[in-house]
Amino acid sequence: MTHTVEKIGGTSMSRLHELRDTLFMDAGVPRYGRIFVVSAFGGITNLLLEHKKTGEQGVYAAFANAEETHGWHDALSRAREAMIGAHEKVLDHPADIAQATAFVQERIEGARNCLIDLQRLCSYGHFRLNTHLMQIRELLSGLGEAHSAYVTSLMLMRAGVNTRFVDLSGWRDNGNLSLDDRIRGAMQGIDPAAEMPVVTGYAQCREGLMREFDRGYSEVTFSQLAALTGAQEAIIHKEFHLSSADPNLVGTEAVRTLGHTNYDVADQMANLGMEAIHPSAAKTLRQAGVPLRVTNAFEPSEHGTVIDDQPAETAAVEMVTGLDIIALELFEQDMVGVKGYDAAILEALTRHNVRIVSKVSNANTITHYVDASLKAMRRVEADLTERYPQAEVTSRKLALVSVLGRDLRGLSVLTRGLRALEKAGMASVGATQGPRSVDTQFIMERADRDKAIKALHEDFFAQPSAVAMTIAA
Image 1 (cartoon, helix red, strand yellow):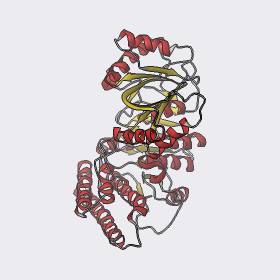
Image 2 (cartoon, helix red, strand yellow):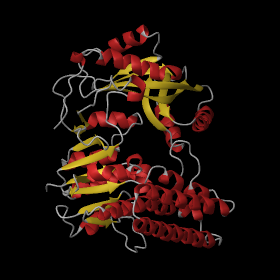
Image 3 (cartoon, helix red, strand yellow):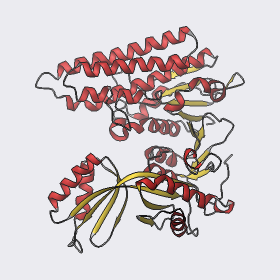
Image 4 (cartoon, one colour):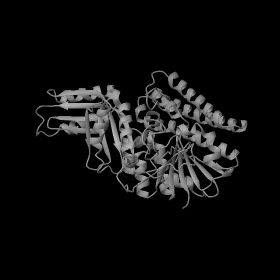
């Protein structure tokens, strides 16, 4: 096959009208041979579920925790108005806006009636709402992607592009298909060379994408579509380039586009909360032999960054990034030679859904660096203190700053990094580098995170010889 499968993220979707004549068309000519997978417009999924960063309630959270019905009704109405506002911003023709608004009304009111019926059913003692919560989450998730895909199709058809709206959300579908069967059935008879399919990022399937991948479901759909259709390349369009550091932090003139990296580095990035692609989606592409390219949607002339399974030709630092963490430390003087502490800590972290970023240990201390709220950590501390009353269990706010590269061998990253931090007037709380030589981690006081990133980036990227990067054609 000669087609590509391309995904547009939510933030970029909110500027969809700016992409019509560059991403989808060239000088008024449709650019066929491409299948697009779209996320919901920016902020819509937060309104339908809950805010990804702040945890503020959306429709799902309000319904799941409802003591009164008006809360989730109001939340659903707010989501409806935000969806209408999103397509009014990107569509020009009144007829298209009217069609999109009718689409939103039909889907939102259908979901509202479904939730009312479910709430009424669960008022009887034989039925429990908590057994249906995941299905509700799936239903609400699909509303955002179905809306954005439909709006994109309307915009492109108005511009003269032969477009196909491909709805994988399973709306009013009685089938119980697997993800692969859902995709194969929807794509049957479609010729990307003659038409441009616009596919929902959410796919209803018996595996339940939300259950396993939660908010990463759109990239799972995207990667599976690329693998099943034998795509020549999978492309993710973001509103920024994958760069050597955050340009807002170190300056636009100082950063470099990665150009080429591998899935190993992409996994490290995901671990630090800045996903280039969901790890499960990356696995699908890697196993299918489909290369991934990450581009800036608003700079179509730039080639972006290719991610594949190729090793680096030369050792090089590629990125410096960081993440706020909490250090969970368990100190027990009598731990030496006694088994079970590690397993108990992992059990407590898993029970409270705490994500581990990194870990260090010695004879009598085990420290996990985690990405979690202090509220969750208090629960973990309580569990561990109950199990090990003689131990000292503490949590401390810190930051992890990491230097990444496909091959860091021979670059003395750990030594140079500590010197750079000292020169900038900072001391690292801890530092480590594994034998695989793809990342070196510096544990910093949280207030020093950004300053540390700048200092390390300046040191490793000041000399042209420090990095060997090429823009992949």
